[in-house]
Image 1 (cartoon, rainbow, N blue to C red):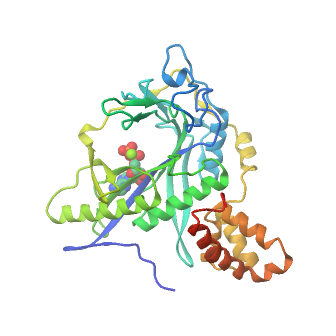
Image 2: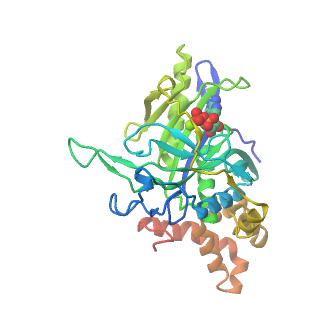
Image 3: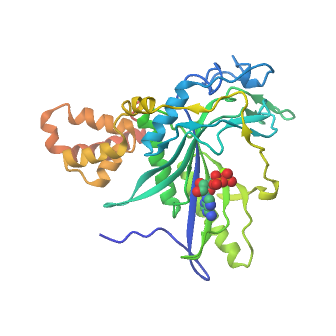
Length: 381
Ligand code: ADP
Ligand code: MG
């Protein structure tokens, strides 16, 4: 078996390591917003049926959506993490037209979930563990629409107050392929657990990538954060470009300054959005309208018992039951609809169990290419 090596950047001065940490915003699957009875479905017509709290009207008070809390706990358990029995909601203060309250309710020092991990496949027989620092609950903001009029900006508050889970990894990822694999695996876990629909195109899953480079064995370099990557392909492209840019810059004698950057999908380049000097001081403090969130061991146990089979368990089951390769089992369990389809097919006739490999090949080559050709997937075929 060949030795696995993460990709490095070859500079004029030698090889450079890449260091990546991801911050992922996942919209919680629940009908209501995080602290109000407003509907969480942002697809409806702009600004219809908004709850008074979410447009910042005085006299309104937040009440936690217990379903969103349960979903965060379920996700935490699916990510092998610690559920904190006491967590705090803080106000993150800043002004922006799409944030009518003047602050976002988030969790800062005491998140609901901490210290988990995800395993990603790095070769046929090796996995790598990517540690997760935290998962916290927070409100989404509204959306400014700059493309509806030549001289006006409109605001749609449908998203304001929608429940998000922010999932932050440690800087354990070593190249853009690992970063893509991590996000794919995280999305698959969220979908199996049914806590986020994982739709990146519609923005229910969004990713910020923190990237730095360093000479092997040196301490961590200065990072840049690339905001709002809306597909796995763009995440990978942006990291590859950014790591190369940093190496070129350092080798030309420049320093990397910590900053927020945006990825331009047309040019394939990242560009400065704001520097660290322009960074906000959010003046976090505990929201006086909300009590600390307390969770009992009993509640955690109850939610644990509701977690369905997750991709890793299912993958191992497929390998054992049908003697499939790690690769085949991974492909089958990457998407819930694929593993469901495989299960249905293989159970449709007792004879088929002996031909599992042929069933897999048929699904992953013939069926997938047919669906692809017709722009369909197993959901809408
Ligand atoms: P912030 O609030 O400024 O975004 P965090 O401490 O929450 O800072 O870190 C954000 C992300 O940056 C995490 O995913 C973390 O793993 C990653 N990160 C931290 N240091 C580095 C580094 N030197 N290179 C790459 N990523 C890093
Ligand atoms: Mg950040």
